[in-house]
Image 1: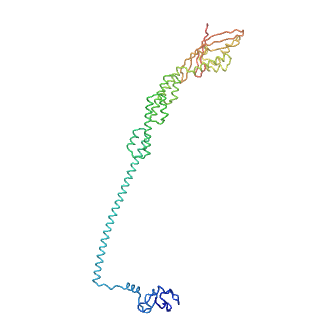
Image 2: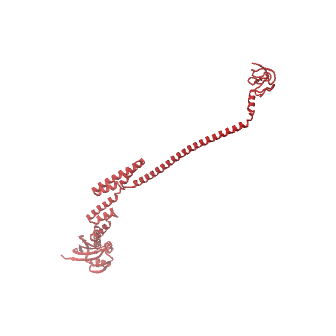
Image 3: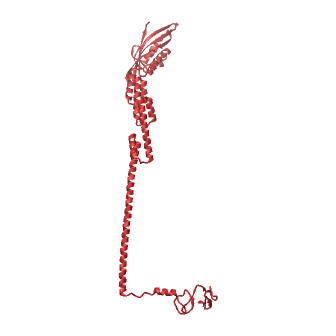
Length: 388
């Protein structure tokens, strides 16, 4: 510890005192003593205020700012040569380093390009393969040929699992279709074929099954050889292979065979005729005969009026009532007179019971031959009395 003068106010103070007791300026750590004259002053001053001796820091700064002595011409030439040589070496090192970097860059770029090219090629290859696989899958799924599906499975073993499962399921279904079709063909019955179509409505063999059913039903219709049988065939197969033949057979049968409905038409016509005679019903009588008859009881081109006249003629004054009855043992033949239009010739026996006013009854028997037009009206009638 030393007693110094305060650089601020000049009073004596210890160099270890924190502040000057007189002026309050900070002392400790901020004061140095000039080694030249012993004067105390602040450290931030560059030199002693008394003797102007430079501080160590100021001396170092002065030395640093003092320019070195100028070199000689030989020193300058040597320095220039050394500098040029050094710069040349640096340039060569830089060029070598640049070449190395360029080579590395070329290698890296080439490697990256190669990797990209390989990736692109693989992507194209993979895309092309996937596209080809997808096309093959769609084609196979739409095919009904087991060989096509098996070929897909053999060719695209690494295809998506969903595709492989779908193709395998489709293949199993087609094989089952083949087995069921073989069984139906071996059985050969209508029931077996119908069951096959019901189980496999989209089968590739459906049309063959339909043709087989068509043939079976046609054989059945031919065996029956009736209008009803051929009509049943047409109901089952309206566009069947034998539809035209069925229509021809129906037409032929209708032309030569009196059907039950035709027999009913004949019996109704004569029942109405005789009922109208029994009841003296003119309206009913005229509706049962044609407007113009070819012949009526020997009169050609007879009219309905002629028929009414006949009715009144047979009711003589001595007749109280009359009862006509038909034996209904109709012998009917038919002839086609137009497209599915027929004329019917009918022969049968009829009896006439005449109740007279004197209480007697006269019974007469007649053989009747008549014709009916397609509308079921009597167009010709002959009556021959049978004498017993």
